Image (cartoon, rainbow, N blue to C red; front, side, top):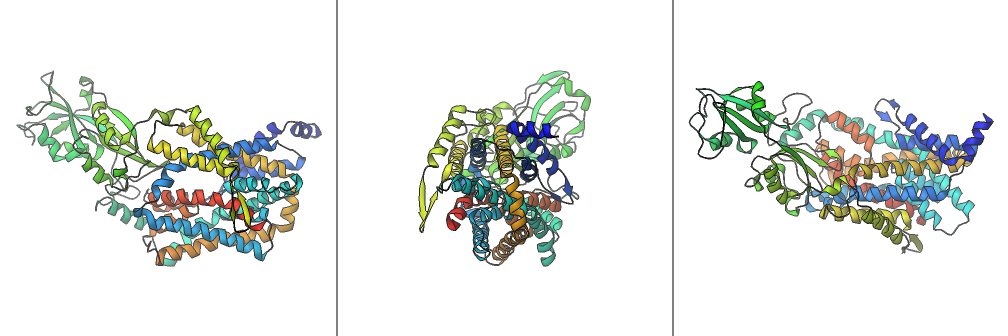
Amino acid sequence: MDQLMGILRSNPFMTLFLALAFGYFIGKFKVGKFQLGGIAGTLIAAVIIGQIGVQVDEGVKGIFFALFIYAVGYNGGPEFFSSINRSTLTQVIAAIAMTVTGLFTVLFFAKVFDLGAGLAAGLAAGGLTQSAIIGTAGSAIDLLGMSKEAANSLKVDVAVGYSVTYIFGSLGPILLVTALFPMLYKWDLRLEAKKLAQKLGGGARELEEGEYMPLARAESRVFRVLAGSAVVGHGRSFLEDLYKTSLRVESIMRQGASVAVDDTLSFQPGDLVMVTGLSTTLQKCGESLGIEHEDEDELFSIIEESRVIFVTNKKLHGRTLDEVQRDTEGKSYGAFFTKLSRMGHSMPLLPKTEVHVGDELTLTGAKADLDKIETLIGYKSPSLHATEFMTFGLGMFLGYIFGLYSFHIGSAEVSIGSGLGCLLSGLLFGYLRAKHPKFGGVDTGAATFLQTFGLAVFVGVVGLNAGESALTTIKQHGITLFYLGVGVTLIPQVLVFFFNYYVLKIKNPVIAMAVVVGSRSANPAFSALLDKTQNATPVAAFTVTYAIANILLTLWGPVIVAALH
């Protein structure tokens, strides 16, 4: 055993990866709806392993946090800036109210219970479940001009405050939005979500439990025209007009030969007609066309494309899918909306769902048709699937440049630091990428990896370097910190929920709950809310408030350090 301990001490990077593996193993376990998660698990595992006396170079921690925070800004930049508009004003105010209330709650407890800057920052990171505060507070501590020992002591306090308060910080929002608030107002969130989906769908009723929207997959089928079919003697436009923009005649075979599909054509009994459309439309197509022939598909060789288009047209921001389809109807012949994604979340594909700049809209159809509609919506960008390292390097460089800037809040000097500098740079480059997708692209998978892995390595180094001093601090302040964490978690949510409900008039139950969890950047609670609603109706409100809260909460790290130092 002593030999193993010696190997781990002399190979800190090996030990770091052991902490990552052990931490993510711990994070996978669930208790009911609660799951600790890999980041908190890594910190706990690193603190435990760190008792053997492992020290990892501080430079490793700094570079991985910079990568993480740049990715946060880059991924969230498009939605952050597009969220600030009139249509989402009340939700933006709600997010600001939640984050500011959380900040003042932390500062109040710190003053009353005489907490240092490190413990207060950790209390904010865990109680408000914003892991990035650990890094931004640590960067601010490095700029205080303290001795290395004093600075390390404060950083240990940050890690301890986070680890003690994080569990209830994650559990509290789940209890509030899935149990307490609905019970208080006698809400059935599933029923309310169905009502909201019906409203977004223009009055369409859900077909059955758990399925609130129509099948959104576009596909092709072959039908044989019967003698008594309604289309006999009529042309292509007659059939397509029956289903508006939901159907396209691709090809016709008559007596074994292909027939040109144009406006002069009339359907005849025995024709084999290949049509493309949404699944729900094709299910009804046989009523007017004829009988489906599944074994005739090999006679046709039509190639379709599914294309993801990045929305950049400002005129479409805030418009519904129904309005977007009408606006592009003249050029969208044969193109079908099949998916809408925002910040990695699938949006309900319903007529009244709003489209935002930065969304990814998936369309299916012929290449020529997609080329036409792409110019009206935005454009497919190869930068979404490749990384432009020149721009990425420039973004990181500018982040460190921004980090050299400092300003005053009252008598306190606040230095931005490399963490916040890279966050601002990421926001800027993410925004530019949304405006000009061919500029500075970072592969979406790579950006997500940087964000997750960067934070995991950062907290792993924090935990390992904290070592024995972390346990000493937990023994001294553990119980007090836990109860203060409960207060930091619950007080802002309760106060701001009533503010939202009675002052901002956010009274739809699903939207009200989504705003609460988004304003707290509470991903576990959002997952629990989706389990309750069983559809995607909370996503829109969540993404707006999450984009705002994720940035503002990250900024509180240096603010807390400056206010309490």
